[in-house]
Amino acid sequence: MLTLKKPKLLTQALCSALLLSNVSTSLHAKEQSSIDNVAVLASKIEADVIKWRRHFHQNPELSNREFETANTIAKYLKSLGLEVQTGVAKTGVVALLDSGKPGPVVALRADIDGLPVTETVNLPFASKVRSQYNGQDVGVMHACGHDTHIAMLMGAAKLLTSMKDKLHGKVKFIFQPAEEGAPEGEVGGAEVMVKEGVLTKPNVDVIFGLHISSGKEVGTVHYRAGGIMAAVDPFKVVVEGKQSHGAYPWNSVDPIVTSAQIIMGLQTIVSREVELIDSAAVVTVGMINGGTRSNIIPNKVEMVGTIRTLNPEIRQHIHNAVHNKAKSIAKSMNAQATITLPLDYSYPITYNDEALMAEMLPVLQATAGVAKTQVTNPVTGAEDFSFFQEQVPGLYLFVGGRSKDTPANQAPDHHTPEFEIDESGMKLGVELLTNLTLDYMSNHK
Image 1 (spheres, rainbow, N blue to C red):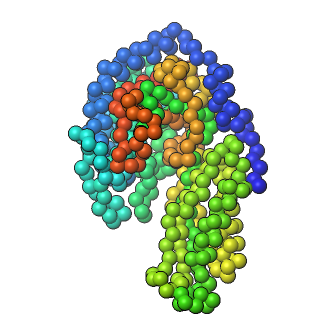
Image 2 (image 1 turned 90 degrees about the horizontal axis):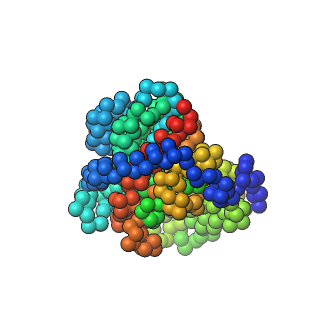
Image 3 (image 1 turned 180 degrees about the vertical axis):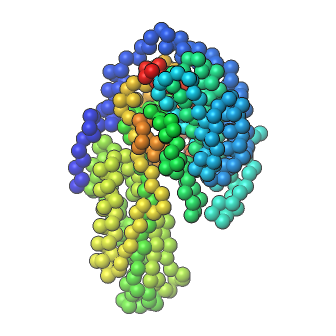
């Protein structure tokens, strides 16, 4: 049994609860006036934000192929008079707004890639785009809301540029490619951006990011201190045995039976070794391949899976346990197991800095309203925004995108052909990005 140490301050759940009860929700009159002003300005550009979103939705591009998306973003940012850099991590766009006054560097990030999903939603701006993905002809769709993320950040760039005289420091707008993962044989996304120095020259002090949620009601913002999205670690296990005729299994070392035992053994890691009271964990085998016909026991089986964790100690324990169980079970069956972990990519935990969360919570509450600013449970989905948070304090938040007329249990899932959001939810996203920037700059001049 893995017994976890408690996090440095409090368990994540308790920390989030105390943030709500202990942090003052009141702002100075000047700060509240600024937030009210941002709401007015956001309303004035809401039609533009919707127009931008529809353009990107109708013209999605896959990871590391966001060429026209990047051109459109860069052209707009240049029209605002910003210093713009293109080709970052292949297709990323980064723009800098310099107030000319001393202060912190605040980074705001949006992801820009679509998914290999064929849209079925009946919209006048539905995607009809097709492309090549890992050698296959596929439909392409913004099935996770990245089109809204682009539009919200473009809106925040417009507002912050118009309010340049109120800023203290610099704002770095990061439009990141390949959040959904680079194509086979390529690298991309936030990890590459970090390696290329996106958080330097000038050095970023803090970073904020948003994700639209089709399951959360429009007008709400959802936060959590500590781990909010899981680390993701794909793995591969290759089991090698001895081939034989299916009629004479005693002449074989059966890798299929061995693989079945390994899969069942891997399930006991989470169910019997990990204390799940504070943090969820998942070990899933999603693909298994072996054999050519019914009457031949093959000599090799390959299986591929994913590990999701919200706690660094649990993450390391599961990594060790996957190796130990796969090898030990294989040995007990006279087979051999080779484990590759991580397989191709690996994302850290998306971890919201507790002190920063406490500092910025009043801004969320003043922007969305106290009742509509809600603590959320962590999810076992993953986000490469975590690579930015490994380097600088950051907050990652969820913004509601579900129409008030849509019951929660009927909301379409992300990454599906039916994915859809209510565009009225984007206005709050523009306000949040803008207000977080203004407030942080005001308090860290």
